[in-house]
Length: 449
Ligand SMILES: [Zn+2]
Image 1 (cartoon, helix red, strand yellow):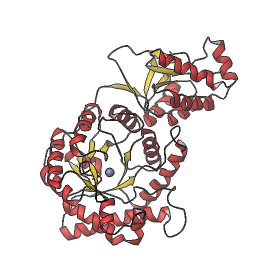
Image 2: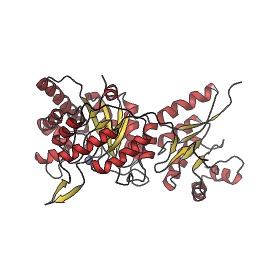
Image 3: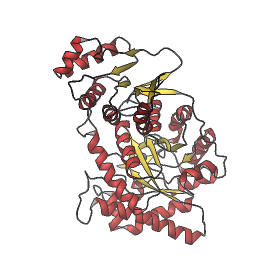
């Protein structure tokens, strides 16, 4: 039975922190934890075992920082070797635990994908496509080695999360889960919130989503409330062991295992479907949490009847009040705009975007269709540039399926798609893209007849 079937029946328990336990066991400052997959496989397996004995039915591979920016393609610590060893350590621990305990209930191995450590453009210098490639490499090795699902975690930027989720979805058939790191006001580092991140992640088809790290369980309760309000897939909460402070040069967390477990029980009762820990949590925290929450009834979130488009920072819900869509980025009947397109005057186009945002538009239409330009490439560029200067959701307006796909792929949110109609050809071109990347369609009520 796969993890998605199991989560329908009972609450699932993720493991807790890995890094702090490795430090206790001698990981030196500056030493990369992933190297221990090959230098200290016994230690890594023992930590997995401790979580399994605590009652975790999911263990996460020690691959949080494993990516091609930190590890090379060759040698003792090649990326491939580290990722393979990490999955093998988790599998070995699962086997040993099953024979030691006689417990035959399923344990799932999550291939851990953490942030790359670099910011994506326009905030940093990493291209979306480069981020995608970094994740793709890890997904391919981890899946080949036998992971059961992919866990995208500790994402403070939903654009990076999108790169990781797409890399997983396009390179394996395993379930994909994603958890974001929110601050106490429910914001991501890049300005998004629970609602906009959920729109994007559910649009991309993640199987479960939630929050991890950053907050202790007390502060995460508010995030959970918001997740349960907007999410239609099972919700994960993996908080830290309270809030960190520095004590004699060491990081310590402000609540103990009992208190942690008590608040986690409240979150289980609120409706969290999958519970575990992040920084500072230990097998003791997880054991307390499991003993309080095991056997609680699992209630999955209902499908939310909401029509939502989003940018990286904003969400627009369609249906409750009028939504104003700015149509200035559209050559139809506008000779000055046509000229800007022909002359590749991106500044003019962006100014039209900024002006409409200043005047209160909720969503911006983006149409760059002119017969004499390369529409797919100009569409991609326009969407990329627009989303670096404004934070409104975009409506991608084109009849060219390749322009639509290029824009949807790099769009940082869940777009409105203008348009589809009832002709077979139109539906066949548009719907698979919307299914893959997420989106809301504007549909014209016409067909062949
Ligand atoms: Zn953490």
